[in-house]
Image (tube, rainbow, N blue to C red):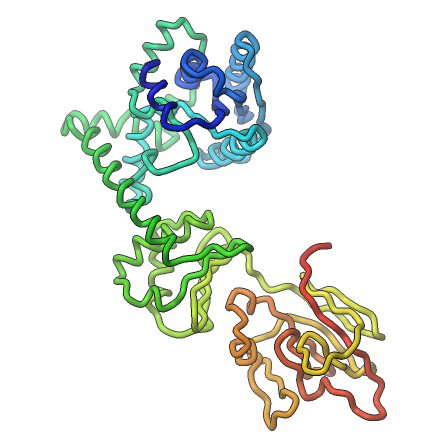
Length: 424
């Protein structure tokens, strides 16, 4: 055990925040790392999910162990955000990552070979591709010193070292999928096919290699912008088959933190294959995929601003992150416009049927065409404002002034400038 821990930690040299729940595996992790690399420990971290007395006792046990050994302890917790495994996991990991960031460290967990095997089988049941089947073998910021060690070996180590630990009673509840896999499904499969565990782990290793190769391709064909979007040149996608896109899109989406499930992947692949610019599709978790002439953009939360703002009596206004203020006309600058001061003037998000007659033009064109010609990205286009005076679109800020947004002799006027500032 100690040799396996030492070898695993030797691969990376960052400071560690140890995830210690009070259970057998995590208390063994605390003991083993203290034995082989005590200076690597920045802190231990424990999280009370608020599920009852057993959870509180486990957290208390961690506190006693850390105090006795001089290990700094980060505590987190609160009322349960839900009763699902996913809800507990998300809350715990948010706490662990925050604790590691405070210490300039990485999280180390006590995941064992058995945990990894259960994870892989769960992914098989869900129809995961290579990205999911890689399981805990996937490249990660998390350090897992026990990943090559089975759960029985870890427990024997804890007993031999007379470590105090708490057994989580929920580990025996068949309410949770992982428990049903550990208690029922895996033993049944092993009775029929004794090598199933080794075969699943070998599958995971192959999947991890495929995942790594796909990540390399994703980094070549996609760009993560400063504001967190994923941009992919449309011609780059033209040569891929449906099967290749099904493998590549999850790798690209992961670059901006989006985990595409099977249905999300199918939706994105179908959207990629369909022709036509100016379209978008909902993905999941508030993410949308947009298509322009030149590229695809994967964007989180690109929702149009709601409502309207009024421009009246020469006063400024804010609309979403857009700011309108009285200013000085700069002829030819689409970020300024001269408007009639006596008109009813509002700012709102453009609508599909909006048209505007540009200055010097004989007829009106769709606002969508103006935005497209100005190479406004599909994601930005979703929330772009227009200025409407007496029911007529007179200005597309940053794009084009309308015919009505010009100085007219004898009529009071006011000049506005527009910029984008999503701060307060």
